[in-house]
Image (cartoon, rainbow, N blue to C red; front, side, top):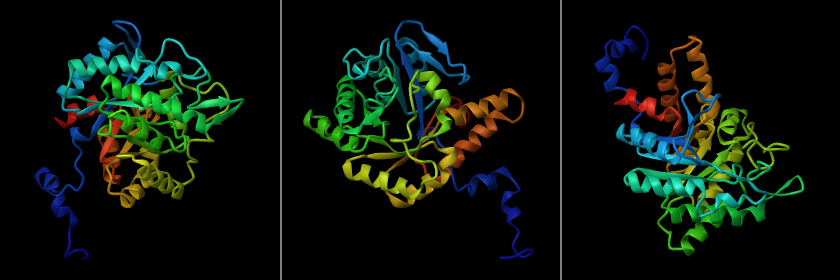
Length: 323
C-alpha cells in the first residue's frame, strides 16, 4: 500500500472514524488507586513531592476511596505508615496495624470496592529495608516468614488481594502456603514480579517514609539494564502461585511490559509510579505541558504496551476524563 492509492489520513479526518478504529481503549476498569494510610483522625497530610496526594487517616482514606469508587475505579491498594518501627517490622503484621484497620474500615463502608494490600516490610522497619537485616546484609530466608505473616494478617482483616512487593526470592510460595493453610485458598496474589531498582521511586519514599537508612536495594530489586531476567522472575512467581504479575515502574519499562505480555496469559499489571506521576505534575504546574493530555497519553501507552491493570496516582483524575 503506497501513496496515492493508500491515504492513511482518510480514517483520521473526523472523531467518529478515529473512535471506530482505535486499537487501544483505556477504561476506568483498568485503574487501581494507591493510597497511604496513617494513624489519627481527620488527617490529610499533603505529600510535597506528589502534588495532589496525601497521607490519610482511615476516615479520610474511606472518603477518598468512596470518591474513586463512585467514579468507577474498582480497586485501591493500601500502603501503611506505622506510628513506630523496629528491626523486625512488627507493626506490619499486627492485628491493629494501620493497613489492617484501613482494610476493615473499607470493607465495612465500601464492601464492593476491591481492597488490595501491599505486602512489604520497608515502611515498618527502622532500617528501611524490605527484609530482615544481618549486619548490612538482607537475610532473604529469614524475611519470608514475616512477609507471610503480614499477608495473612491482611487476609484476616478482609483484604480481597495481597500484593508482595519486597522482591525476596520465594516469597510468593511462602505467602500462598500460609494463605492456603488458613483457609484463604481463594485469595489471589498480585506479585510485584519484575520490580526494578529505580530512581523513579523517590517521591513514594517521601510519602511512605520508607527510604533505606543505609545502602540501597540493588541486591534484591532488579537491575534496570536487564530484560531477560524479568522473564525469569515472572516465570518463577507464576510457578509459585501468583495470580497476577506486575512490572514496576511502568513508563520507563514499556518494553518489559510488552515482553511479559507475550510470555504469559495471566493478567499483567503495571505500576505508574510516583516519579512518573510527579514529573507530569511538576511540568504541568510550570505550564510546560498539558497535564491532563499527557496523563491520558501516558496511561494509554501503558495499556498499549500490554498492561491489563494500571496502578496509578492519576486514577481519580483519569476516571473523571474517561466518564
